[in-house]
Each structure stands twice: as C-alpha cells, then as structure tokens.
Image 1: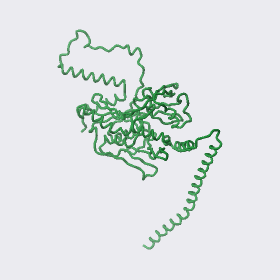
Image 2: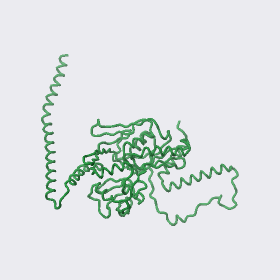
Image 3: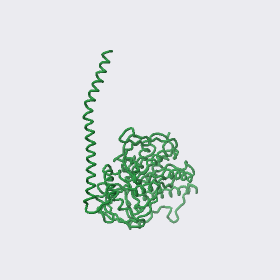
Length: 443
C-alpha cells in the first residue's frame, strides 16, 4: 500500500515539475503575442495619422475607421460585416418585411456580386434575374474591387429610379444588360394556394411574418378544401428562398414535426452550442410532405429542408441548395451601428453540416429553361378524337354521372399538364403526392 501511495505521489511531483518547467515558455509566448498585437495597433494608428495628414485630399476620419472595421470583418468570411447606422436600421426594417430596392439577395464570389435568389414578385424577379447570375457592372461601373456592401450601395437608389445591371449567366455566351426600376419591396413571407388536391405553401423568406402566415394560410386552405381528408398532401416550396431568421426556420420545421431535434448550432467553444427540438403538434396532421429546393435555397431554407429530410417527414425534390451553413449574430454597437459576425455553424438532426455542400435532394429534378414559343408551335392544330367526328356513336356503357366524372378527371389532367409546362418541378412534386395518395395509408 505504501509503495502505491509513493508511486502516486512521485507521479504528482513529476507533473508539478513538468508544469513548472513549461509555464515559463508559455507565459513568454503569451507576452510576445500581446506585444505583437500592440505593435500592430500602433502601426494602424501610425498609418491612420499619416493618411489624415498627407493624403492628397482631406479625408473623413470616421469613414476611414468604419472602412477599416469593415475590412477586418469582411476578411473573415463573406457574411461578416460592419453595418453603419443606416444599414443597421434598414436591416431591422427588412426583417419586418418591407424595404426599398431591387428585390435580390446577393453574396460575393470571385470579386463579383452573385445572386443567391430573386424575391418573388419584385422588380428583379419580373426582369428575369435568376439564382446564380453574376452582376459585373452597375450602370456601367464595374463592381470588381468593391466589397459587398459597396456593391449593394451602388444598386440602391430612390424608388422609381432606373438601374442597368450587367449580368453574366451560365449557358449564355456573352454578358447582357438588364434594366430594372427600383421599387418598394413588400415581402409576402408565405403564399398559399391549392392545386387539385394538393396545398402549395410558397415560402419566400424567413422574417417575423413567416410562421404566422404559414399557419393561417394552411388552415384556410384546409378549411376551403372541406377538411384535411380532402387533401392528399402539402408542397413546401423553398426555391429561391435566401433564408432569414433562425427562429422562424425552427418554428416552420416544428410546424410539421412531433418530436426530435430540428437543428443544432456549434461555435468555437463547444459549450456555446445550442440544440433546438420540436414540440408536439403537426399542422399537416400526418399528411405527406414534399419540399422543393434549388440553388437559390439558402440558410434558413436549408435548416427546414435538412430537418424534414433527416426525420423522413418530407421528400426533398429539386436541385442542390446553396450551402450556407453558418449562423450570424448581429451585435449592436455604439452610435446605432452594428456588427454582423459569424459565430457558429449549424447542423441538421443527423449531425451533418451543409456548409459549402448544401442539401442534396432525395429526387433530383431540374427546372427546364423556358423557351419562347415558336411560330410553328403556336400554329399547331389541337388533336382530335372519335368524339369530335360528326355523327359518332355515343358511349352506351356509362351513365351521365360517370361521363361527367371522366370529363372532370380529364380537366384536372389538362390543368396538371399546363402546370407542367409552367413549373415542371412543382408539377413533379404534386405528382409524387398523387402517387402516395393512391397507395393509401401505410400499415
């Protein structure tokens, strides 16, 4: 027993000696690191004073400091930045759902402005701007060399004023100009409608209105359909949704989940992580779901798609999402400005990060590019059948009610075909729900 205690004591003493020997160099390294930081700050102060004193024109000291702060933040990643008091105020307005501009969510890639997605019903959307477009010039002025905030400032202007942006698009051999008239952007967070027996929830953004709009819109569509038994499922359309508030993404996911994790966030310190879980209650009452995504689905959209996919609550259809798997915290600063800083990554319930990878759909469905109707197509004659022939015999095996039902089914099929021409991905999603409804409830 005495030997054991001594051995343990010897180990402890050795540890103390080792610690004492290492502490000296570590303290010296820490002191040196602090000294280097202070030297760099002194260098910054020296450069700042020389610019103020010797630059060819008089400069605004406040703007110089703001530019330095923004440069420090934007060097971290594309989503960290400094928000001036005006920018911070505009961001607070945007989360409430109304602001002025073109109606596009943008990021920066290779020095150019890249469109994450156009917002439904906005001037940019109506002008034909697409997710993945690169904006190289604004009113003839290049955006190359500008940071994202500076490029966005070029695109801002009075409501009703005109702007010409130069676009580079994959599949187009040459850049082309698009003229857009700035307008007040009023975001309708969720638009709801019914296609046949399927409810379509078009979620355009995640702001303060999103969950309330989704809940009230879904309940209204169910009521107008005559009850939940009258619908075969729900399509949650997240295409070209650039994201928004994390809290709203969690609430929308929770709307269709009874239990389990929705998303987790992990910062640099593991203890700073958070997990968000679903609460009982499913607004869809167990009806099947299809989630539509594409390359313009980012951030909060990917949280919803990833959560419903991991829980096997929805079939995800479309193309790979944008791949923004980071969380930004907006921190108020003095003088009413703010700092937007990337503080964590988020992970889907299965533990996967979608940063730079995106959410992969269960079924890949490309949206065909719309082609202008050719003269030959427009002159095509409608097809004819036996029933169109003069004097053709009647069908004597069906009652009038049965014939009426067949004609109604044909009308639905024609409407589905028209939708397939207009929006192939949505039509595909609706077809999936039709097929699932034919199988009946699972046993």
